[in-house]
Image (tube, rainbow, N blue to C red; front, side, top):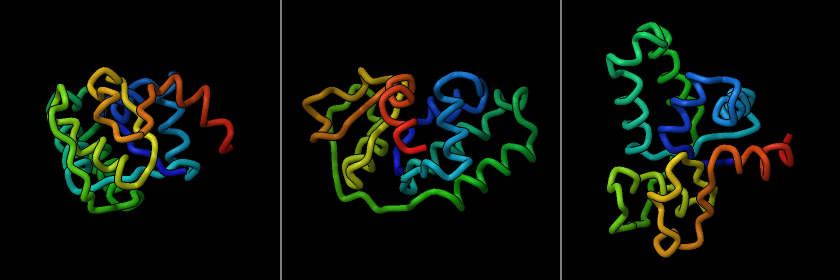
Length: 138
């Protein structure tokens, strides 16, 4: 199953493997789930992972291994969808990619994606995803 994963869920899942974001990361690693990304999404993942703050959680080598894994195991697209007027313009790449590929967007910030701008895209929290979708695929 292909999904778009907001950066907050990706990082949260790596920092706390026991919660719903952690379960999502486990299913990404096992191949049950696959990230859909474009260059903007991947660039944000890389930018956040390389922040000095995360050195207390991941070694430099760990961070580069994570980046390499994401780079090699994600499904790349070029989105032609444009969404304007989001509360946080930094979220544009995630909703645009999800709409382009007609896949779920999993985020911890659902309020950043107003229903009237989603163009039918399902935006769901990690807990909702685990409860409603994940175990149907396994």
